[in-house]
Length: 349
Image 1 (cartoon, rainbow, N blue to C red):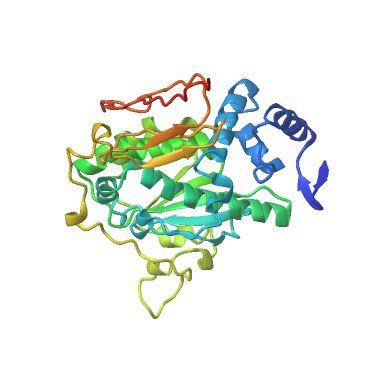
Image 2: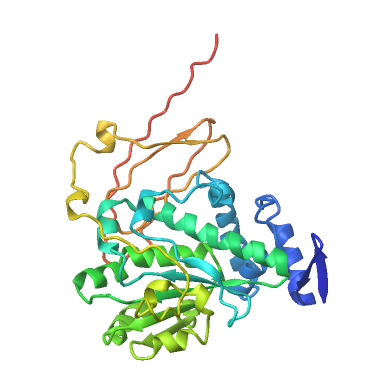
C-alpha cells in the first residue's frame, strides 16, 4: 500500500504502517515535529523487530535527549566548527547510486589520530562533534526520503589505509571507541545500512576477533571487509566514483574517484591534556549547563583520558535522582567527584 504524507508517496506496507501509527501514539508526548516522520519511526521498529516493550523506553530516552541541551533537531543548522572536527574530517558525499537509496560517508579510519583526539578532548566534546555529523547524515537521509518517498540509509565506508596494530588500538577498541559505537547503535537505529572496510591490512582478522564480540549482533551482520588487493575495483561495484574520495586516486593523471574531501591531520602531542589538580569540582572548576524547568540534561559516560566536568542547574523545587553508570565498561574504574548545593528561598513572612 502507498500512503501520502506531505504530498510524498511513501511505500510502506500495511503492517508497518499500523505499527508506525501505534508507536507514534505511544510516544506522542515526547515526539518533536522535526523528528516525526514515518521513516524515522519505521527505523526503530526495524531495529528492534517490532518489539514495543523494547522500543518505547529506548525511543523515549532518545527523544528526551533530542529535547535536552544537545538540541538535536537544530544542531545541523549550525556550522561544522567543533574543535574535534579539525582532526576528524567529514566524509559525507552523495548517493551511492549503484546501491539504491543509500548515501555514502567515508571515514578516514586508518589516518584519524583517535589516540591523540582522546587525549586532547573530553568525551563530551568528542561526542558532540560526532552527534553533529550523525545529525547531518540523518538530515540528508530525511531530505532524500521526503524527495523520493523511499527509505534511505548510510553506506559507512571505513578507509583502513595507514592503520597500525599496537596496544593503543586495542585499548581504544575495548574502551572509548566501543562506547561511541554503542551510543550510535542505541540512538541512531538503522541509520547505517552497511560498514564497508576498505584496504584492510593483513592483521584485520586479529582486529576483527577483538572487535566482533564488542559489537551488537545486527552491527556485526552489516560489516563488509575488502582486502588490500582489489578494494578499489570492488568498491566501484557498490558506489559511483563521484561518491568516493579523490585521495584514493593512485595518480593525478588517472582520476577515477571524484569526491573532494579534506584529509585529517594528527594531533600535536604538545597539546595533549595534562592533569591539573586545581581543576576539580571542589575548587569550583565548572562548565555551566542550564536546564529549563521540567526538562532533563544528559552527560554521556564512557572511558576517557580527559576528565569530564559540568554543572547542572535545576530551577524547580522537587525530587531529583542522580544516576551514575559504568555499564559500558569492562575493566575501567569509574571515578566520580560531585557536589550538590541547595539554594532554597526563605518563605515570605
